[in-house]
Length: 152
Image (cartoon, rainbow, N blue to C red; front, side, top):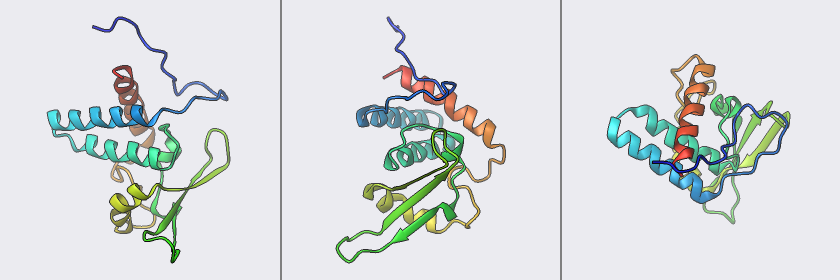
């Protein structure tokens, strides 16, 4: 039984600065998503788990249509002799606060997921490519995010 409802940042807040989630919060949300996958064996939760990892690797920590609509061509790779791993950047366009965000993905995400991304077509969505109604997908993710966040 929940004794107090926490203050949950909503997606409907416009032009307000929203505090980022802490890494421990993201980890707990991802753990809950994985637990839900184990219960239901619905592959949607596996992809959602990867998507939340992508958001934290890109240091966004907020779900949104622009990050759900990421396609392979938005990634670019650079090599540096001093680094063992490739340096991978992702560009998000038309975000809430800026026309474009470009950031380097965390190395753990690049190691684990970048080889899978290379197999996609240039114009394929990275997350849930077969879902054509992206607004419907966003609403599903948004509702689940709120549910998982309440239980932190």
